[in-house]
Length: 531
Length: 84
Image (cartoon, one colour):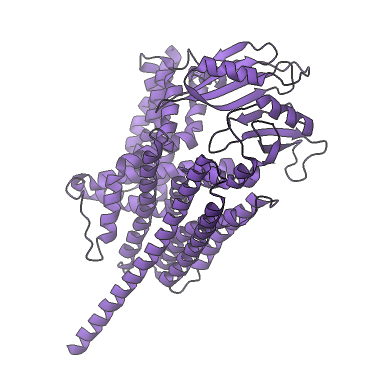
């Protein structure tokens, strides 16, 4: 390959890295923690699980539906969606909309979305689920930065450029990829960041390629979906979805009301039909209508498994759809495998732990990329000092800002009582404020290293506070907590401790680097004086 | 760097759609297999073309070979869609 081509690609690799670094860092840190989303959810809902003492031996959807129908004016033109109780989350989790006579003062919509937790045995409404959604918010940060659909596409484009950075990195290092595979020169300043960057980049290469590709499929598949639908199916989106194996029947509402009973009988039937599966969701289309359809979705208990689905009409309990003919559909099966690969849910906790390590290592790779850029530019005479300082401050403020925001999130989720009316909103806004505080205040920092130490110290204090409070609660409530919740608690305590350790080790490294720099400069000064 | 990014981004997207469409119309496989192959190949093609555009000294230099692939591919798309 020509030297000019390699030079252009190296410049592009560094340029793309700097531009996407902040968003990519958020995506990887939030994504790494989200690998344990179910455990974080179980940890958040621990007090509710301990209070209600729910058992999963009996699950009654009929009681839950009756309870909701009695207490809420359900908007029948919206979906009615229930999650199967699980050891992590021993409640029936229900999503539906209530009818509003006047438009909603904030959204202007004629309905209000509801998200509740109900007892699987009695159907009693236990709590508003939105108060226990920190895990979901962390996950949202991973795929859309908490910005909805616009954020989803934005993260998709960032992922595309991450893919480009990975591919260009392979080309740049191709000739030395085997030779320098284990090279890490701990001594000497110049190549330390580069060695760490190359080492993590090479060792994590299959992981990076997999994440870049699967992330793109999740966030930007709409582009190819639209172009396929237009070019191959004459604009008929339904025909495309049918070819892709999503060919559920469409039954219209009759606009005649009917009580929603008989879901429990259908659940037994569905489990019998679907075989060795774990039910995940139950959805009622046309809730309250005579033509209501109940869909049961399940995941088969294999490693890379497809989602299976069976549908019944509630009125006469007849089966109208089963994922049988389309079960081996390449798109359906392929998307299922892509999802399993991305979430690392195909080989238990060991695999998720490996993914966590690789995810955090990738976050470190992003940091080293920025530090190399700064080191390299600092040596160039033409480089504007203002731009260099801006990138230095941005690197410090944005990266540590993410660590601080997540620390604030964990601390507030621990500290605020579950009865707090706007718990999730308070946690969310505090996290955003912490991030923007770090980002903006970094631009006024005179000494970036000292500023980084303060921010890391603050983050470490927040993690330690959460750690102490959670350990105290865990010790006090140990005998009352269900077994799975104990496991969830232990895992979350482990995650918080890991983040605290990262803060502490980073501060130690900054101190060590500062000492080395001052020792070197005083050595040079004494050398000059002797001469 | 921005001009090369824009060229790679838009021409890469168009080229990936066009090349994958040709494959879809030419391969003698089942409909769902062709769709999945398209999905698997489209993103790497798009990212690969972006990398390719960065390998050139300028956006103008990157445009020439890309159009040299895109135009025949587009003509093949048209022909295959017409005779389908």
